Length: 412
Ligand code: GCU
Image (cartoon, rainbow, N blue to C red; front, side, top):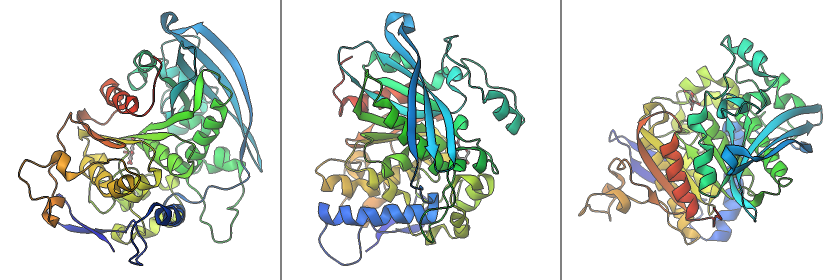
């Protein structure tokens, strides 16, 4: 059975089903068997297989300040040693946690420009990789404090949550041709026969799981309440990490778009041809076989969102961000909703957004209106459309924190 829908342009799309075509009634047991198959299909067709044999070898706290952010926060820097069958590499974890008597929930996400860029604190280490990464891109080295807008630590800590981050390019340089010198270089060829090789998104997602391991060594953080978060390519990464690693208590995808939260079958600006031309290294090579044939991909992104159920999942879009296809992101939450409902929790629904009097009983209901900017809809599966451009900004975090407050008791 396929979920039929009507895209914004009126073109019909047929989504791969959440269910086996055996006609049996939906049940949690049935879904949990099916879920494994869908996850395998994502590994086969999109992201590649995460190899076995990797681990977090060591965590060393290299600095701890109890007087961060004017005395309201604790700041920790730690060295993580990531290991695979072929070697080890170091990654720097930066944590800001509110002062609290008990461990607090935390957001864990990769950052774009370096830990030193997320803060104006002059004593946060600048990665040794800054020059090499700048050289590889032919761009100037990233500057301290240049990315603080995306990481409003005082706001997040003030609401009772810790936040932990690693620079994604310290893990693997984000260009084709760098697989051997990054996290993927710690591993040999795929471990299983016929398993397609992983792409950089897979390697970054694996690293997020190792960072989650490391948070077990940080007393300030409740390791059972760690929410994967990411913007854009790092939102794709957060979703794939949470889909694979059920220890993530939830996930936040900010404008993750193509290969993230948006449906391939809802045609936006970016499709498989565009993304695999510009960023071939993000995915398994097999993904490029679907260029021009997005509708033949065995999976679609509502299934990726569903893989995270029933863990709290928040998808955020921005109105002036056609590249990430806000409507396609909303549609994937809509089509993942039946799985959240199976577990007794609400997702997004046309009823949240349709004008009064809309005929919700018919397929016409799938012609859902464009989500209303500023109104967060859904509960365990939630969606928000912000006015503005492609970025993760304080306003996004405010909605993320409101969402998180519904699911995690915070002590802030
Ligand atoms: C590019 C890419 C998108 C991605 C974005 C980002 O625009 O095509 O798929 O989400 O970069 O990560 O900022």
